[in-house]
Length: 153
Image (cartoon, rainbow, N blue to C red; front, side, top):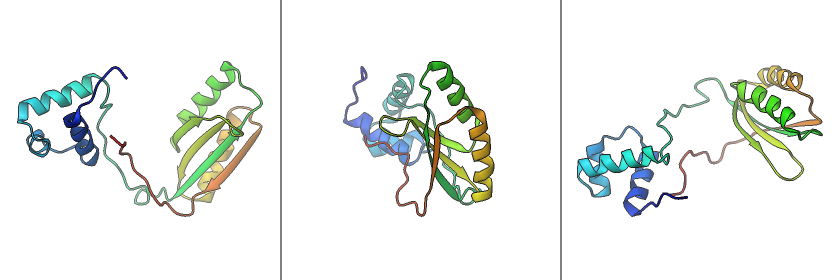
């Protein structure tokens, strides 16, 4: 990383991860700066790409997305054409909220949020129709013990 964070930058980032809507004046007071220098630091962190954006965090259960499924995918194809097709298909499915390429026995891992098993079955059928897959395995989350968007800065 070419961008060096000092202690104040890290405090700003921790506070913004707690509440991105915090007014600059309040944030400045918490991190020990006046308003203008604090605003300049937030702008610098944003311009440098450290702060990617500001979002609203939603309660998935209140949106009827109570079932979290971790989908492990194995494939016998590892060429760029297949990967592009699979990445495009999986990324276009709104149920897929996280998507990783892995090392080890599993090639790809998707985190999928749906209403229930029936909704997952509909998703699953769309997924396996999108591109040829060697193996698809699904693990249904029984309980969410920890979930955070905050990075350890």
